[in-house]
Each structure stands twice: as C-alpha cells, then as structure tokens.
Length: 195
Image (cartoon, rainbow, N blue to C red; front, side, top):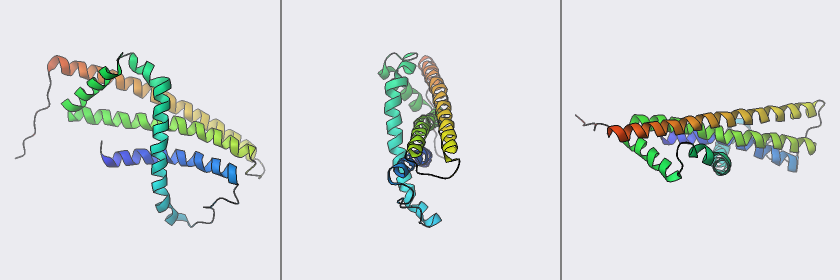
C-alpha cells in the first residue's frame, strides 16, 4: 500500500475521532472554555492535522481490537478455520501478483475506513448525548437537533458496520479463491526486465 493512501485513510478515520473527542471536551469544559473558539481559521489546520492523524491511528487500533474480538474471528472462520491459514493464503496472494496485491490493498482500505467509522459514529452519538446532558448549548431547539444528530450517527454507525461486514466477507472469499487458484496453477507473476 502506498504511504499516501495510508495517510489519507488515517486522516479520514481521524476526522471522526476528532469529532467525538471535541464533543466530549465541550461537554466537560463548556463552550466558553474551549481553547479553539477564538483561533484564526486556516493556520490552525496546519497544527490540527498531526493531531487528527494521531487520533486516526488510535481510533483505528481501537476499532481493530474491538472488531477482532467481536466479529472478525467468526467471519474469518467460515473460510479459514485457523488464523494462520488465512495469513498464509493472504501472503501467497500478495506475493504472487502485484495486481491482486493492489486489489486487496484497496479492499483493505475500504474495510478499515468502514470499521473506523462504525466505531467513530457510535462514539459521536454518545458524545452528542453527553453534550445534551451537560447543557452545553442553550439555544431554542438544540435538544431536538442534538437528538436527531445522535440518531443520524447511530444510523451511520450501523451502515458502516454493515459495509464493513459485507466488504470483509467478500475479502475472505477473494483471498480464499485466489489462493486456491494460485496453488492449483502454481502461478507466478512474470518478471519485468528493464530494457
């Protein structure tokens, strides 16, 4: 996977993590005490990008551990009863063909983003309820807006989880089928000789 792709992937996940972290901070310290409210617009983004990237890494690891414990094992076991068997098949596919490796990397990117946002959207919904209970916003209609926002985040979390599940299932099928094909044909990608 290209480093740029991984960076963008973690930024996309990190934006969601930054949302729920910010909302929890608002609920804890209030809007008046929030340090970025008086900051100028664009220059602050340069300083926030590394933080968003870091939050993306942390959020991705949290989602990976949670999903591995709750969902990935049984899903993977449908095609690969043993985790090592899956790792061997994946290694075979990736090392045998750069085209297949790129295809699987693209699939893994989508899986990670969906997994990260399934967790992030759920945490944003919880953080919105925390903000509502802390009475951070006192404008008319804020309760309905926050409640609807939380409901939308729960739906986004469910849609992200469903997308993760279907993408992950398809990824296991493809790894299984490609590995079987490579084993049966002893396929090796032709060497490219520079002219």
